[in-house]
Image (spheres, rainbow, N blue to C red):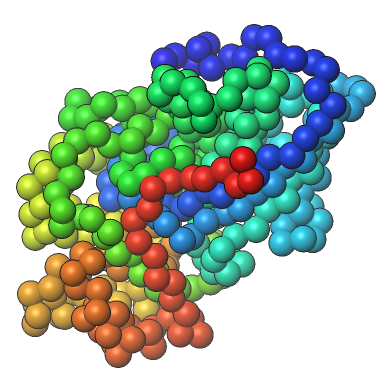
Length: 366
Ligand code: DP6
């Protein structure tokens, strides 16, 4: 698929309006996306676990209107929200040539998250993918194709285009449409595209079944540096070339680890990726640090616990201070005990969220 395959050419213009609703999950990258080219094309491939319970639920009501401007209102948890509008305006501008009906309707976008507001959990992946999916359902109605009864081929197109649109909203959002593992970005080890996320089709060992992710909320405040700014700082970054090459290598290694189920090796790649991501931030110009003292306390506790117990628990980080604690389902009881006894005190107000690997987005009320 190339960009022009996603341009919607003709659609019914006599539909007055309707309502669509989707829930879409967050995801956590194992090999990180950090650095992008124009049009949200990643500098390196990434792979993520789709989460199960951390989701955005979005309902879009569309009503035919006059005039040629974009027209939409955003409601967050029932309240009109002006702060989200500029991001959605930019999103609409980026995607309008692929979904030209955007100018024909007024949209009421009602959205909420299952995770607490201002938890420091990035909601752009779940949020942008949920809107993209709603737009795809509208496109489907306007083009009169019903996915459920359709071939795998058209389901494939629906997911691909939803991911393609989501990417233009926020890069990592393209990995939230499906589960349980999704790859984004051209590479030689696995089927993929720069334009959209692709469900990982390689062999995955039983050890990764229901893999757990407990998110420790270390800092719920606004980040000092947004991901978008962080990505830009990879331009002219002294280690960029090596980092992008390393991501290819790590993805290749990870594909064999996923097949063999070697958790020892899994831990090494995942933690190294997390620390490399933050190392890139610390060596950008200007440099910045998103980890907090408690992030490091938690990392050291995890290492000590692993040393002592031979557990396979490990951590990863996204662009913030919160820690994702990853572990196999078989260790659930002991690790939750460890988290309660030793890690919760480093979380802001003792807050953490238990999640696990999930299967992707769902349409509601179809
Ligand atoms: C550190 O997808 O939030 O979470 O494309 O500018 O919206 P934009 O950035 P975003 O970047 C997230 C990067 C990351 C790593 C990852 O998810 O792969």
